[in-house]
Each structure stands twice: as C-alpha cells, then as structure tokens.
Image (tube, rainbow, N blue to C red; front, side, top):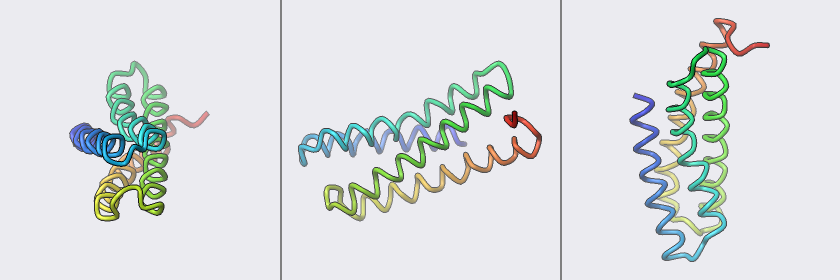
Amino acid sequence: MIQKKSYDFAIKITQVYHHLIDSKKEFVLGKQLLRSGTSFGANIEEAIGTQSKKDFFMKITTAYKETRETIYWLCLLSDTNILNVDIAQNLLKSAQELQKIIGAIQNTMRKNHIGNS
C-alpha cells in the first residue's frame, strides 16, 4: 500500500515539476520539490530491501524527513502563488497522509525497540 501510494505521489510530483519549469520557469524550487517528492518513495523501496531492522528503520526515518521537506516546498510554492492553491492542497493532503503512514511505521518500530540506540 505505501509503495503504491508513494509511487503515485511521485508521478504527480513529476508532472507538477514539468509544469513549474515549463509554464512558470521555476527551476530552483521546482527541482527541490522534485527531489524531495520523489525520494521518499525510493527510500521506502530501499527500506523494503534492507538486510536488518535497524537499516529498515533508518530508511523509513529518511523517508519521513523527505515527506516533511516535500510539505514545506508545497506550502512555499502555494503561499508564493507559484503553484495553484488547489493543486498544492491536493498534493499536501496526499503528502500528509503518506507522512502519517510512515510515522506510524516509525512509531511501531520504536515501540519494538528498533532504531533506538
């Protein structure tokens, strides 16, 4: 479930990135959004392929941080009127949902004393 949701989100982010560079000529912030908005899905995939629970936890933690960064860039792009508010709100809702899921995975692992060193 998280893999599919994060992949679908990455597709939307990629589409928004192309809109930002083609229509708005916004290269710097667009690139930041592209990087963070696609990387947490990649980190989830890496987590699934790890050899240890601690490595899994570290990759999930990185994915969580990337969702937070993505939310930041979406808010900034929306609040500066570079990105349409409706598009930004739709993406924010998805990013926040993904953040909650990833956060829940982290919390479960913490409760099981994984990742606490």
